[in-house]
Image (cartoon, rainbow, N blue to C red; front, side, top):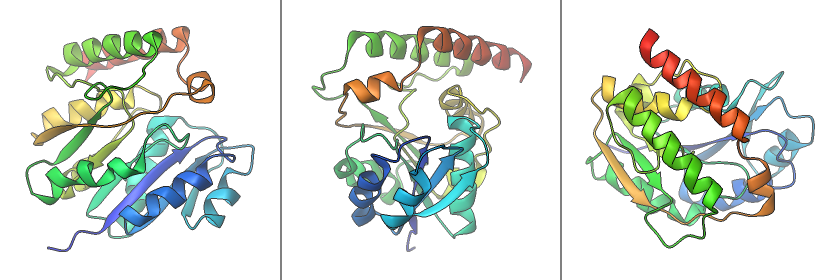
Amino acid sequence: MQLRIIAVIPAFNEGTRVGAVVRAVAPYVDAVLVVDDGSTDNTAEAATNAGARVVRHIENCGAGAATMTGIAAARSQGASVVVTLDADEQHDPRDIPSMLAPVQDDAADIVFANRFGRRNRIPFVRKFFNAIGNGITFIATGRWVPDSQCGFKVFGPRAVQEINLQTNGFEFCTEIVRESVQHRWRTAHVPIKVLYSEYTLAKGQSFANGVRTALKILLRSFIR
């Protein structure tokens, strides 16, 4: 079966970087779709000029909402596989082939990137928050994922059709793990390269946001 692979890139005020990301991703996929999540800069224009199709939120809805909008749009374009990446140049598109391999080999329904599987220079604060996120995700879902909070993922044909995210914020990463458990998706974990800069660190979650995200995850784990 011929797989149609579409990259989904959620973006909020990434006009200075999203174009380069789109151009770097394009050789590895059939199409690139950028979700402009209510940006107030030229994100949409930069993505379009780089060759991406752009779907726009009128206002900023959050990373989870933008990711689900992108996956739904990719489905409507006939995607059988969806690759999600961040728009800030944190992820290396050259890792896409290794991320795709488990799905193309029919060995996994979803592939999680693992920033800790390689010798990456990861700031302590990021390691700390990721460890907390992994722990909360395990408590909420019963599944251990070494890098549950990374936005770089590959959804195979089954996952593309079945996923239905309900959370808008950063807690969506944990919801994806929950979906993998509920739908009994086969999982794989692939080491990737990651590049942190002052820019990418500044756009990450603050401590207060991290606490709020954790509380939302735990609350939803008891309600759902």
